[in-house]
Image (cartoon, rainbow, N blue to C red):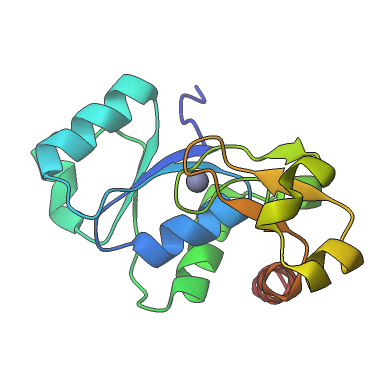
Length: 157
Ligand SMILES: [Zn+2]
């Protein structure tokens, strides 16, 4: 009886940094800066998402079975905890494929068509560009990307 949807999450409103890390791993993760317990639970049920929270009282407020209570403060440790608890191993090909703000999968876009939005140095050193269709932000595999990749590698050991 495996009912748990392990790869879609909704994070409680004090787990914003963890939500970003989950998105960085490629997981569909909802997060709002403020969310009432009732709304959190309703969304999780409606979209079959695993709730990640630090509030152990949620279980008594009608939270679904797929509820994961996090005990650590450090976002990197929290991510480790989620992956270990649910037996997940994020696939490398999915890393950094989502907008960390909007939770939307990034689409590859033409470098030439976005030339006026790309700093000259980046334009001459990068070949691949991606865009979030929600916030319209452009992404490329620069130093920020590199640092996040290294951070994820470290977390996953
Ligand atoms: Zn976005």
